[in-house]
Image 1 (tube, rainbow, N blue to C red):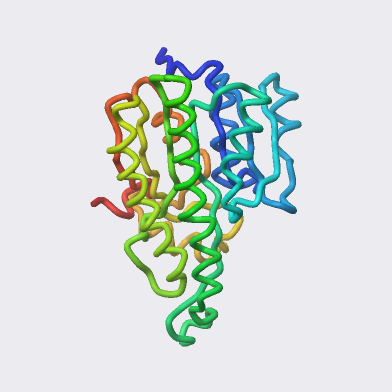
Image 2 (cartoon, rainbow, N blue to C red):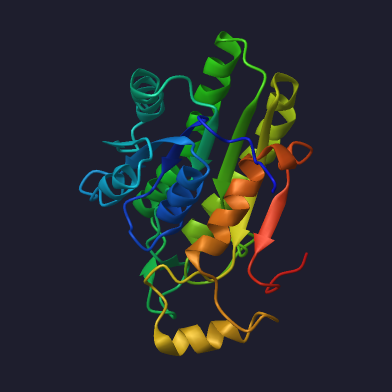
Amino acid sequence: MIDPRLRDRVAVITGTDNALGIGAAIARALARQNARLLLVNPPGGSDHLTPALRADGHTAHAITADLADPQAPAHVYDEAEALLGPVEILVANAAHNEPDTFTTARGARPLSAAGLDAHHAVNTRAPALLMAEHHRRHQRRRADWGRIITLSTDAADGAPGEISYWATKNALESLSRSAAAEFGPAGITVNIIAPGPVQTGWISRENDSRFAQLSPLGRVGHPDDIADIAVFLASHQARWLTGQTLYAGGGKRMS
């Protein structure tokens, strides 16, 4: 049996408020490895997950934080340390997505400064500041083991109809690779998961069939598909991987 060596590791996971979402699936998967969790939900988000995890005997706490606030990362890490101890694993999963476009031909809202800023604040700036906070505290306690996992998309190089979302995810990938290069000497790996279509409640039956045809495996993704990859990237077995983008779409994208 492979031991990922995650027992009692402290993990922060952002964006866990959707019961059908990737963040919730990652939280459940890490809990099954006996990691100790701080779940970060947006204002107004529901904490459906913590009671269920605790009922199963896992250690989990949930807090609310507006990740668009530049002060949020320090608050998140303060809370995690107070409740659980030093953070060793960061999963930056939270995302903001409001479809927009350069034109109105696709029925989405037109590009605007406010829209760009809203996407940037959550999808790019927040994970960058979280990564920086993670590294600062890691260095301060002279730790030598850490994992950062960021969630992008397999269309981060650009797609019509959701231009701000894709653009900020592309920027997140760049930031993650830079962090991997700079944090490596401290023993922190940084890797990116880029999912294809995943059924988190947003894919209609019609689109499910259409998206399934894009994968050689003949289906859309499930949150657990992504969660298992996150557990691997956090594990001892992934110790020699850093700065990598893993396309997780059943072969929809292969390079």
